[in-house]
Length: 64
Image (cartoon, rainbow, N blue to C red; front, side):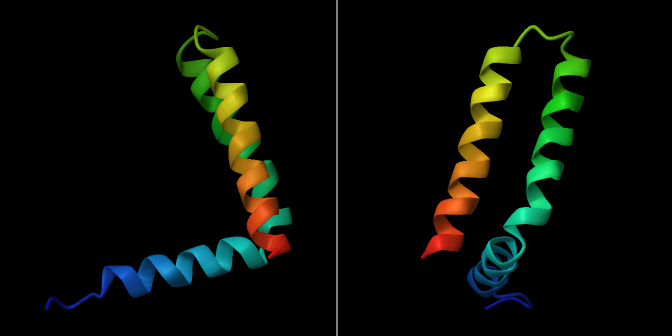
């Protein structure tokens, strides 16, 4: 066993993400905008779909 228990770290990260879902929505948007800028909007539809899926997943987990 290594120094980090990655399952424990991932679990804690997921827990914090759920607790702060409202604060992460703007971050998801910002990252998507950065990807759009770097790809000149070539994948805008896919990026938008990924953004919506990420925000939905955060809201769904927060509701549990």
